[in-house]
Amino acid sequence: MKKYLTFLFAFTFLSSCQSSNDVFFDGGVNLTIVNFSNKTYNKGTLYIGAVKDSNFIVTDSLKSNSSILAKKDKEEFTKTKLTIGTFGWTPDLGKVNNISKEGAFLLVIENGPKLFFNPFEFPRPTLDGVGLSVWLKDDELSVLDGKIEKQDFEIVK
Image: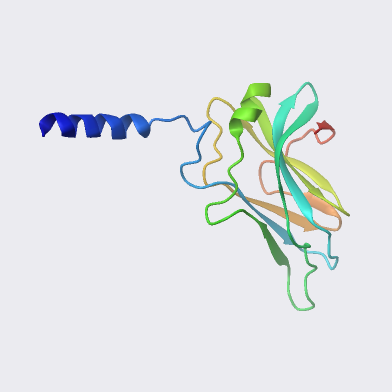
């Protein structure tokens, strides 16, 4: 019995030590777009990718299934969420890591602006349970924290 408990403890401990590069433990990535404008935008796409030599190399994407609605008369804003399932989007971070040790997100609105934001680095990208928020106002996208200063990367898909 003691041997069995030792094996069970060791197995549980070792299986919990997996790298966060491969698994999202606390949930995936969720994006909320807060629209302060009176304009409805077509669907948006959130990309994740590697940043290398002034290029943003797309490794995965999450497309919205609905338009980003304009705020209503008495509302200050509307919110549109991009997510997958209960726990969020869990892109394969190994694809990013195989290209570069630096990654980022890109949000592209079909009939609107684009924004590179939320840079992360390996070996420990902090993406577990990330709730990203982007504000849309006067045809510009912004974030409270995490905007990448360089916004003119060449996009490679």
